[in-house]
Structures are given as structure tokens and as C-alpha cells.
Length: 385
Image (cartoon, rainbow, N blue to C red; front, side, top):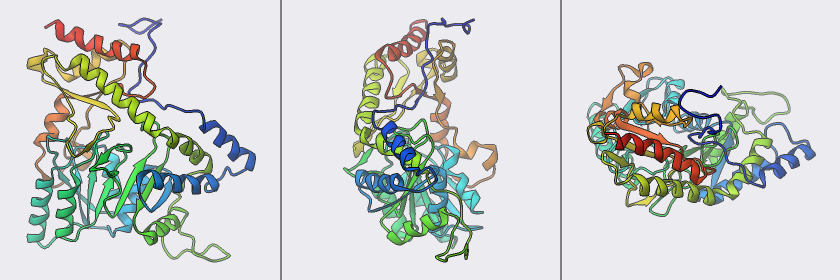
């Protein structure tokens, strides 16, 4: 029995499903043939090397998740109990959890409308206010949202003025550019995610990158239970079980080969949506900032109910009734119960985007007929006004 509102023949359209290529299976087979099944191995070494070449970073450590990478990155730039860490409020909770893992306090910074990312002016004002109080943060975490880099030059300038390390959460931005460079490579450390919904996936995995060879070497040690160099198990600091498996690294190597194709496919999705919907009253797409290239990991838009005739949630439910997955934009972290009471600079922009914003199906394996189904639902709602 098919769900109400759609036919049994209507395949589910997912928001962002994994898209395997032709090489992944051969790398997995190679891992099995060589019996390199446990964490670490030749695929891990090769994946680290090939990924760093692709993004333009000298050093990287392949880890079990982007969250693990952020946890290690924050620890390695000196974040500890009682410290403040400035972080984008408009993001997924995993951008903030590691701050709390370390016993530190998140201080949330609002977005600016030009890119939906952290507002550089608001960041500078907050750093200045903390300096006046004699309580500078131990780090700033900037999140590059939905496939677009934040405006990094003024953010870096503000951090350097107060000698505060910049940590880049580029989990959503692989394949994007900022003035010709890869976001994630300009701060002290950068992190990437290879979760199943990302542009490339290892099913679960992440990467920590840095210009500092010593920092990445320390990260590798901490990620393998912080074993000291001894024939027995010797530990002089607390470690974690955070390394990526050799099998999953093989998947990552195959995925990395088709990164450019995956970005092109997602940008084509966006182009289709834009061409079909840009004339619809009340709909605005996430802008592409002039300083870089948006990967369009997810196609995101805002819906003004008065002009469109229906709100974001009504549109989402209408899509769901047709077996189409869509999601609201991130609920700002300063509105999350788990972070209630945290210091926040601004918040109105992020709240506005959350109230009106929707993520449309954006996978690189979508067919044009899938995109047409999405557009038909949205267009029907607009025409019914």
C-alpha cells in the first residue's frame, strides 16, 4: 500500500544520497586481498596524500569522522576547560559539540546575508569586546555552509589581530573555492567530513589538515589511543580511537577521483532549480558570493510566505507527501535547548533563514525527472495562490 499522496511507482527522492563511482569497489577488493582490514594501512596513507594534493594542504590525518577531526583540532590549538570558543550559530550541532567535549564554552556569532556564513564584522566586534573584558577566546570556529566558503580574509585578519587561532569547519564545503583556494586550508587547522550525505563519502570519515607537520603528527598519535613510542603500551596523555579504517579509505580514494564531476552535477541541479523557480514570487536562492565558487552541496532557498502563498513547512510537507525528502535549514545553535544561555552575538539573520529556509534534493545522482518532480510540487503550490 503506497503512502498517502504518491504512487507506489514514485521512487523516493533523497536529499543527498551516496553516489559511488567505478573505482571504489576495486580499492575495497584490494584491501581484502591484502588483508589490510584493520584501521591504518596503505589506502589510509594514500588517501591522506591524495586528499592533501587535491585541496592544497601539506599535511592531513584521516579520521573516523569530521566531528573527531574538529575535536582533535580544537584540542591541538589549545582549547581546554573553561575557555571560550567563538563559533557560527547557523550550523549543525556537530560544529559545536567538540567545544563542549573539551569543557569549553561556545560563544555564538550570527551570519551575514551575502553568504549566510559567519559575519566578519560581528566577529571582529565580539573579539574586541572579549579583549576589553580581558577574556580572549582560545579559538574561532568558522563554518562554511552548504558548499560555500565564508569571507575568510576579514575573518583571518580579525583573528590575527588578537592572536586567536582559526579553525575551519569545511565539512560541507569540499569542492568550493575562496579566491582560488580551498576553504579549510587557510586557518591553523581545517576539517572535512566524508559522511554519507556529503559530496564525496567514505560512509563515515573525516580529515584534519594543517600547515603544521608537528600538529598533524600529534593528531595521528592522539587518534590511535595516544600510544607512546615503546615496545609495550605506554601512555603519557589521553587519546582516542579516531583513525579511519583502511577499507573506508579505499572508498575515499575512489570518490576523490570524481570530486570535480560531483561538484559539476550539484551545480547543474542548482541551475535547473534556479531556471525553473527564479521567477516564482517569494522564492530566493542562497546567493553565491563574488569571492568564490559555491559547490552547491545542497541547493537551499528561502520562502517568504506572504509572497509565495505558503510557508517553508507547508512546502516541506507537500514534498514529503510526494515521497520527496527536503529539510529545513539549520536551526541556529543559540536556539537549541542544549546550548540554552550561551553568549550570542546577533542571531536575527540566522533566525530569519531558519524560519524561511529549505534544502532541496541535491544529490549528484539525481535524474532530470527527479528534479522535475520537485519543481512540479513547488510550482503547483505557488500557482494555487
